Image (cartoon, rainbow, N blue to C red):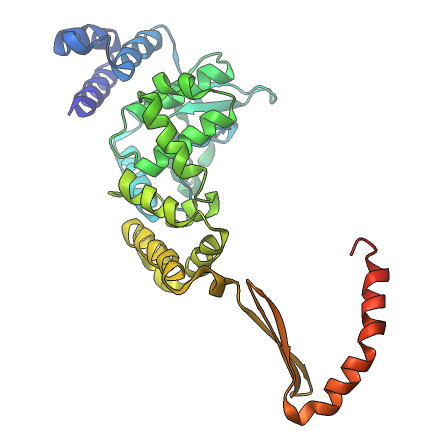
Length: 334
């Protein structure tokens, strides 16, 4: 509820052009919690700063995404939301500017601090326009350090109501990769150190490629992700999950069903024994004639030669000393 009120107040003020009144309104609306919430405090601070900035029109192609990615790509739900925003901006115009900084290495270019969805929507409009050069994006431009860029980007996340638990966890990974400690991440995300530690408890175990394959997983919270991480403590289980994420059934499912399928895949390994996930069978075949079969398991490797190929078995046994010497000479470390 708190986030919803803040979001509506900020958006209404931007549309009317009276952002300077928002911090005062926040004080009146939530006087007892003004200093206890970093999100509320930051909203007032940033809206006050924006009143000092001028809105300019930029070429959307000269704006690049932030180097710190806080959103999942190739997410069907996010794509639908983006299409709706594109239609809204195309019919009503861009009401709220984005925030950018001058690009640190490219002249006459900019880096996005926040407003990714608005920027993506305007770029989509530009791609469909008859005169793309006429399409511009409204922006505030401010000199920002990397740390300030992260803080501004996190502020937008703080007032978004549709940020899922795993999106928040992966954003924390980005913050940590930028050199921030757990304690420094706390005020940025508005979470306790215990909550931050729990985010990393999951992201340290669940491989990034599996997280992004599952996607935002709307409606899936900490308990299910934690249970999934507990199952994936074995590498064999992660490989089992990687096999099912390639199936059409997985790709066509929504986020909640995807993680359910991933949990079932990891659970099946637990039921039948982890060793079986390592089983590998290879046939020694030539021109459709099978001379033998090699089976590898967690406990070792077995070669089976059928009775009808007894002559091959004797030949292999006679050649074995030469094969071992050839192997050892090829790799002395062995």
